[in-house]
Amino acid sequence: MVQLVCMHRRAFIIAGLLLPPLGSTAHAGPKAEKAPEGGELPMALATATVIRSRGGRAIMSVESTLVIADGALMERARLSRPRLNAAFNEAVRVEANRMLPDTVPDLEALTRALQRATDRVLGRQGARVLLGTVMVI
Image (tube, rainbow, N blue to C red):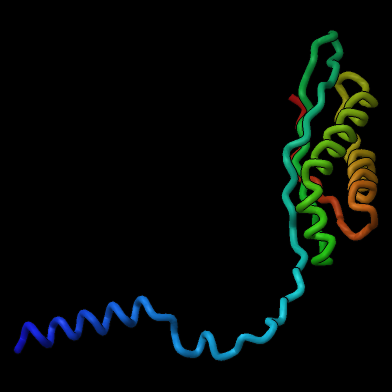
């Protein structure tokens, strides 16, 4: 008798795990999709070569993040990330070439260049560029 009860209990547990819940198939209507939300999109490290005063070379590296409030623009930025990375590298390269040897980077000009590149790639304004670390080593 005890063995029979254990078998029924096992069958009941297995059936409960394998069968879908009864309420899940009751409503087969269209599901309301939630609008995507904005947020922050960290960008890849952008680098460029800088000439030092004695003719040597250094590397300028720029960490940045995009802050996007619009969900649709955020999705477009995620899909355009390779183009954004290329545009950021190009903007950093141009700004690094404008630097005089042994000077600090002009962060305002760098931010403007990155913002223009972002707006150009995304096709409209709405994403804000935040600079993280800018280093010349």
